[in-house]
Length: 238
Ligand code: 5RP
Image (tube, rainbow, N blue to C red; front, side, top):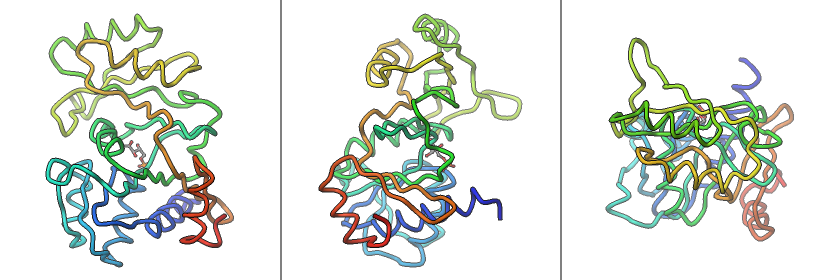
């Protein structure tokens, strides 16, 4: 197996150990798919709210009980992946185009646990990836022009012959910024552009980041108290 796949699995397994509560959110992507696989074996007695059709399908296959954010409103804990993670635990997400629903889930969750392999760790956001921005198809070229007015270089994400479509029926613009010095400020500025639905910058939203690597797993926590919470559940990781 390619090492990075094994690191991802390690992170997913550890993140699955942290799943607790009655209502659990699940993001999207290949790491979350691994988390779902582990949960399907353990079958915790929780209701799961998936952020994408892909995750929903995997949950159904694994026999996990499903719910919606509208029904439950408050989520005990959400597990998700990320494309970039900084030392401040700011995240860049949306590689799979599911970041709008993922952000809505994260905002309604008491705890956000992120599982990544160590290749996702960066010094600052936007170092390796563009910022995914979900936009309305109507007037997308004008929206792209306005985003370029913020200093980015925008390109329409494609899938086969045509534009990639999100689960919400929208397009994604991938916008490269030279340097992202203030993620929170850029997140707000992008979202103020008419036609933008949501962007993939998640500043200060992660509580715990589980990182898989050569030697196992490490855990990064946004607050010291969370360290205690993780230590009780994953004694060997901290
Ligand atoms: C989807 C996401 C994913 O969490 C992110 O792209 C990471 O995916 P993977 O686990 O496949 O590397 O934000 O919108």
